[in-house]
Length: 139
Image 1: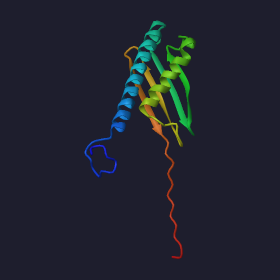
Image 2: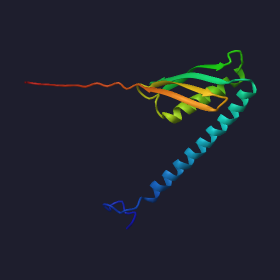
Image 3: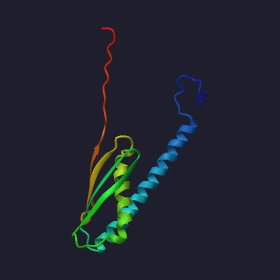
Image 4: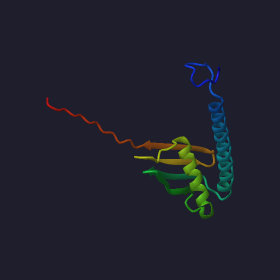
């Protein structure tokens, strides 16, 4: 039996696994399309008001995180009405590249978006706590 869970090496994958993988891949594809649509819409809105560059910092640990600051160039341009969308885009981009970074010890990073060239660079640092225990008894 090809899908017999008792078989030691059937050579095929159970239909439930394949279906779950296909569902996951479809959700990821749709999420990426949504991110790209949001990026295109934000890019056009930012260009329309004269923004050339966006620089942002983010961090997360202990199962939560935030975009800490967002600065645009030229500095005189007001982005108040786009603030929340921009922060959401920054978080989604950073998280997509480093999923789960806000868990445990966390991480932080910066996102730089050259709006004119539509180039996004993310520099990310993961925090990893390590410990080594050595126990010696009755030596």
